[in-house]
Length: 101
Image 1 (cartoon, rainbow, N blue to C red):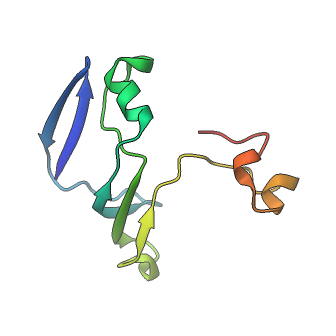
Image 2 (image 1 turned 120 degrees about the vertical axis):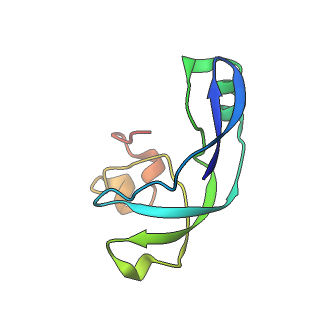
């Protein structure tokens, strides 16, 4: 596995072993990753972030507890809505008053 890593405003590529899939999660193979303004701000030192960015991606599920997901393309979503409020019921979870990021 190769990943972009940010630390102390420096960008590097890191190689690592194929990750293991924890219970309740899926393992994905990246097809395409994007860089957004937040990533650029992280590089500039916003929030003191160190780690591997990457909330904008398209990937293929290669392992999952529910094997129906294997082979499907998926994309990332950084917002988590409650699923129960009026906004969520209307399909507008991005306006959920208890949404987390």
